[in-house]
Amino acid sequence: QVQIQQWGAGLLKPSETLSLTCTVYGGSFSGYLWSWIRQSPEKGLQWIGDINENGSTNDNPSLESRVTISIDTSKNQFSLNLGSVTAADTAVYYCARVRVWYQTGHMYPYYYRDVWGIGTTVTVSS
Amino acid sequence: DIQMTQSPASLSASVGDRVTLTCRASQDISNYLNWYQQRPGKAPKLLIYAASSFHSGVPSRFSGSGSGTHFTLTISSLQPEDFATYYCQQSFSTPPTFGGGTNVEI
Image 1 (cartoon, rainbow over the protein chains, first blue to last red):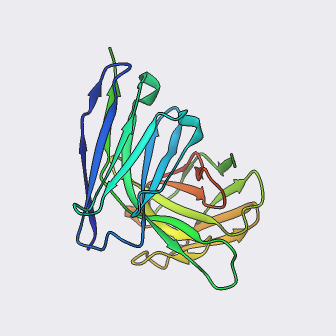
Image 2: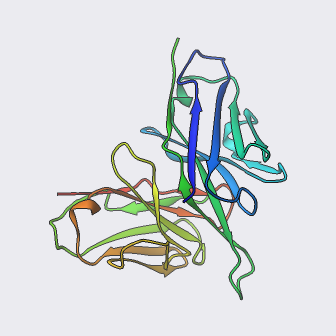
Protein backbone atom coordinates (compact mmCIF):
# COMPACT_ATOMS: atom_id res chain seq x y z
CA GLN A 1 0.00 0.00 0.00
CA VAL A 2 1.36 3.37 -1.00
CA GLN A 3 2.23 5.77 1.79
CA ILE A 4 3.66 9.25 1.70
CA GLN A 5 5.81 10.57 4.51
CA GLN A 6 6.40 14.29 4.70
CA TRP A 7 8.67 16.48 6.76
CA GLY A 8 10.11 19.96 7.01
CA ALA A 9 10.45 23.00 9.21
CA GLY A 10 7.25 24.05 10.95
CA LEU A 11 8.16 27.53 12.21
CA LEU A 12 9.51 30.27 9.96
CA LYS A 13 10.12 33.98 10.15
CA PRO A 14 8.80 36.37 7.51
CA SER A 15 10.95 36.48 4.34
CA GLU A 16 12.41 32.99 4.97
CA THR A 17 11.98 30.05 2.61
CA LEU A 18 9.62 27.21 3.40
CA SER A 19 11.09 23.79 2.54
CA LEU A 20 9.16 20.53 2.68
CA THR A 21 9.91 17.06 1.31
CA CYS A 22 7.78 13.99 0.73
CA THR A 23 8.98 10.42 0.29
CA VAL A 24 6.80 7.82 -1.38
CA TYR A 25 6.86 4.26 -0.03
CA GLY A 26 5.33 1.05 -1.28
CA GLY A 27 4.45 1.89 -4.85
CA SER A 28 5.64 3.04 -8.21
CA PHE A 29 6.87 6.58 -8.47
CA SER A 30 6.47 6.79 -12.21
CA GLY A 31 3.24 7.30 -14.08
CA TYR A 32 1.82 9.84 -11.65
CA LEU A 33 1.93 13.51 -10.89
CA TRP A 34 2.99 14.66 -7.43
CA SER A 35 1.19 17.52 -5.83
CA TRP A 36 1.36 20.12 -3.09
CA ILE A 37 -1.78 21.57 -1.49
CA ARG A 38 -2.20 23.77 1.56
CA GLN A 39 -5.10 24.47 3.87
CA SER A 40 -5.79 27.47 6.05
CA PRO A 41 -8.95 28.81 7.71
CA GLU A 42 -8.73 31.94 5.56
CA LYS A 43 -8.24 30.37 2.13
CA GLY A 44 -9.46 26.81 2.60
CA LEU A 45 -7.81 24.18 0.44
CA GLN A 46 -5.49 25.75 -2.11
CA TRP A 47 -3.53 23.99 -4.84
CA ILE A 48 0.15 24.97 -4.87
CA GLY A 49 1.53 22.96 -7.77
CA ASP A 50 2.29 19.62 -9.39
CA ILE A 51 5.36 17.91 -10.80
CA ASN A 52 5.78 14.85 -13.00
CA GLU A 53 8.56 12.29 -12.95
CA ASN A 54 10.45 14.20 -15.63
CA GLY A 55 10.53 17.35 -13.53
CA SER A 56 7.93 19.32 -15.48
CA THR A 57 5.99 21.54 -13.12
CA ASN A 58 2.79 23.52 -13.03
CA ASP A 59 2.07 25.89 -10.17
CA ASN A 60 -0.55 28.33 -8.98
CA PRO A 61 -0.09 31.80 -10.48
CA SER A 62 -1.55 33.31 -7.30
CA LEU A 63 1.68 32.41 -5.50
CA GLU A 64 3.51 34.90 -7.69
CA SER A 65 6.43 32.75 -8.80
CA ARG A 66 7.58 32.03 -5.23
CA VAL A 67 7.13 28.28 -5.73
CA THR A 68 9.83 25.78 -6.66
CA ILE A 69 8.87 22.12 -6.87
CA SER A 70 11.53 19.52 -7.54
CA ILE A 71 11.74 15.75 -7.77
CA ASP A 72 14.36 13.08 -7.11
CA THR A 73 13.17 9.84 -8.65
CA SER A 74 16.19 7.92 -7.33
CA LYS A 75 14.92 8.54 -3.80
CA ASN A 76 11.18 8.55 -4.57
CA GLN A 77 11.05 12.10 -3.22
CA PHE A 78 9.59 15.41 -4.25
CA SER A 79 10.02 18.75 -2.55
CA LEU A 80 8.47 22.17 -2.19
CA ASN A 81 10.25 25.46 -1.66
CA LEU A 82 8.16 28.59 -1.12
CA GLY A 83 10.18 31.78 -0.93
CA SER A 84 9.63 35.07 0.87
CA VAL A 85 6.98 33.71 3.21
CA THR A 86 4.60 35.94 5.14
CA ALA A 87 1.98 35.28 7.78
CA ALA A 88 -0.46 34.62 4.92
CA ASP A 89 1.50 31.44 4.14
CA THR A 90 0.68 29.96 7.54
CA ALA A 91 -1.20 26.74 6.78
CA VAL A 92 -1.16 22.97 6.87
CA TYR A 93 0.80 21.77 3.85
CA TYR A 94 -0.05 18.45 2.23
CA CYS A 95 1.66 16.44 -0.45
CA ALA A 96 -0.33 13.99 -2.54
CA ARG A 97 -0.18 11.59 -5.46
CA VAL A 98 -2.18 12.56 -8.53
CA ARG A 99 -3.67 9.90 -10.72
CA VAL A 100 -4.18 10.75 -14.36
CA TRP A 101 -7.03 8.86 -15.99
CA TYR A 102 -7.72 8.88 -19.69
CA GLN A 103 -11.31 7.86 -20.32
CA THR A 104 -12.33 6.73 -23.78
CA GLY A 105 -14.32 9.39 -25.57
CA HIS A 106 -13.14 12.26 -23.42
CA MET A 107 -10.69 14.79 -24.79
CA TYR A 108 -9.07 15.69 -21.50
CA PRO A 109 -7.74 13.39 -18.77
CA TYR A 110 -9.12 13.32 -15.27
CA TYR A 111 -6.85 14.25 -12.38
CA TYR A 112 -7.54 13.22 -8.81
CA ARG A 113 -5.44 13.06 -5.65
CA ASP A 114 -5.77 9.56 -4.27
CA VAL A 115 -2.96 9.29 -1.69
CA TRP A 116 -2.11 12.07 0.72
CA GLY A 117 0.58 12.76 3.29
CA ILE A 118 -0.51 13.50 6.84
CA GLY A 119 0.22 17.20 6.55
CA THR A 120 2.78 19.56 8.05
CA THR A 121 1.71 22.61 10.03
CA VAL A 122 3.76 25.62 8.99
CA THR A 123 3.58 28.82 11.00
CA VAL A 124 5.13 32.08 9.85
CA SER A 125 5.70 34.48 12.70
CA SER A 126 8.28 37.04 13.71
CA ASP B 1 -10.13 30.66 -11.81
CA ILE B 2 -13.24 28.51 -11.55
CA GLN B 3 -15.13 29.14 -8.31
CA MET B 4 -16.63 26.17 -6.50
CA THR B 5 -19.51 26.84 -4.11
CA GLN B 6 -20.79 24.23 -1.68
CA SER B 7 -24.06 24.23 0.17
CA PRO B 8 -25.00 24.05 2.87
CA ALA B 9 -21.88 25.12 4.75
CA SER B 10 -22.97 22.93 7.62
CA LEU B 11 -25.74 20.46 8.31
CA SER B 12 -26.89 18.50 11.29
CA ALA B 13 -27.97 14.91 10.80
CA SER B 14 -28.40 11.63 12.61
CA VAL B 15 -27.06 8.14 12.09
CA GLY B 16 -29.15 6.46 9.41
CA ASP B 17 -30.18 9.71 7.69
CA ARG B 18 -29.89 10.22 3.97
CA VAL B 19 -28.03 13.44 3.20
CA THR B 20 -27.30 15.27 -0.01
CA LEU B 21 -24.52 17.81 -0.38
CA THR B 22 -24.41 20.26 -3.27
CA CYS B 23 -21.50 21.73 -5.22
CA ARG B 24 -21.81 24.34 -7.96
CA ALA B 25 -19.16 25.48 -10.41
CA SER B 26 -18.92 29.02 -11.74
CA GLN B 27 -18.70 27.64 -15.29
CA ASP B 28 -19.32 24.39 -17.13
CA ILE B 29 -16.79 21.77 -15.97
CA SER B 30 -18.46 18.75 -17.61
CA ASN B 31 -17.88 15.93 -15.10
CA TYR B 32 -14.36 16.95 -14.00
CA LEU B 33 -15.35 16.94 -10.35
CA ASN B 34 -13.87 15.13 -7.36
CA TRP B 35 -15.21 14.71 -3.82
CA TYR B 36 -13.06 14.38 -0.70
CA GLN B 37 -13.85 13.65 2.94
CA GLN B 38 -11.80 15.22 5.72
CA ARG B 39 -12.03 14.26 9.36
CA PRO B 40 -10.65 16.67 12.00
CA GLY B 41 -6.88 16.72 12.09
CA LYS B 42 -6.56 14.39 9.10
CA ALA B 43 -5.71 14.78 5.44
CA PRO B 44 -8.49 14.80 2.85
CA LYS B 45 -9.47 11.39 1.55
CA LEU B 46 -10.68 10.77 -1.99
CA LEU B 47 -14.24 9.46 -2.29
CA ILE B 48 -15.42 10.12 -5.83
CA TYR B 49 -13.71 11.18 -9.05
CA ALA B 50 -15.12 12.14 -12.43
CA ALA B 51 -18.33 13.16 -10.64
CA SER B 52 -19.63 9.62 -10.12
CA SER B 53 -16.77 7.10 -10.14
CA PHE B 54 -16.00 5.40 -6.83
CA HIS B 55 -12.49 5.41 -5.50
CA SER B 56 -11.29 2.01 -4.36
CA GLY B 57 -12.56 1.03 -0.92
CA VAL B 58 -15.20 3.72 -0.64
CA PRO B 59 -18.44 2.36 0.85
CA SER B 60 -21.37 2.04 -1.53
CA ARG B 61 -23.51 4.35 0.61
CA PHE B 62 -21.62 7.23 -1.02
CA SER B 63 -22.66 8.28 -4.50
CA GLY B 64 -21.94 11.23 -6.72
CA SER B 65 -23.85 12.71 -9.63
CA GLY B 66 -24.06 15.76 -11.81
CA SER B 67 -22.54 17.42 -14.82
CA GLY B 68 -21.97 20.91 -16.08
CA THR B 69 -22.24 23.24 -13.12
CA HIS B 70 -24.34 21.31 -10.59
CA PHE B 71 -23.14 18.29 -8.62
CA THR B 72 -24.30 16.32 -5.61
CA LEU B 73 -22.77 13.89 -3.15
CA THR B 74 -25.30 11.64 -1.43
CA ILE B 75 -24.75 9.50 1.63
CA SER B 76 -27.62 7.03 1.69
CA SER B 77 -27.42 6.08 5.37
CA LEU B 78 -25.11 8.10 7.58
CA GLN B 79 -22.71 6.13 9.73
CA PRO B 80 -20.84 7.48 12.78
CA GLU B 81 -17.57 7.62 10.82
CA ASP B 82 -19.19 9.82 8.14
CA PHE B 83 -19.38 12.87 10.36
CA ALA B 84 -16.74 15.00 8.69
CA THR B 85 -16.24 17.85 6.23
CA TYR B 86 -16.73 17.18 2.53
CA TYR B 87 -15.04 19.10 -0.25
CA CYS B 88 -15.61 19.21 -3.97
CA GLN B 89 -12.77 20.05 -6.37
CA GLN B 90 -12.77 20.74 -10.09
CA SER B 91 -10.08 19.34 -12.35
CA PHE B 92 -11.40 20.87 -15.56
CA SER B 93 -8.88 23.70 -15.71
CA THR B 94 -5.75 24.98 -14.02
CA PRO B 95 -5.59 25.93 -11.23
CA PRO B 96 -7.66 23.12 -9.72
CA THR B 97 -9.93 24.70 -7.13
CA PHE B 98 -11.80 23.43 -4.10
CA GLY B 99 -15.14 24.34 -2.62
CA GLY B 100 -15.39 25.76 0.88
CA GLY B 101 -16.66 22.48 2.29
CA THR B 102 -19.80 21.14 3.94
CA ASN B 103 -19.46 20.10 7.57
CA VAL B 104 -21.73 17.16 8.41
CA GLU B 105 -22.28 17.06 12.16
CA ILE B 106 -24.55 15.39 14.63
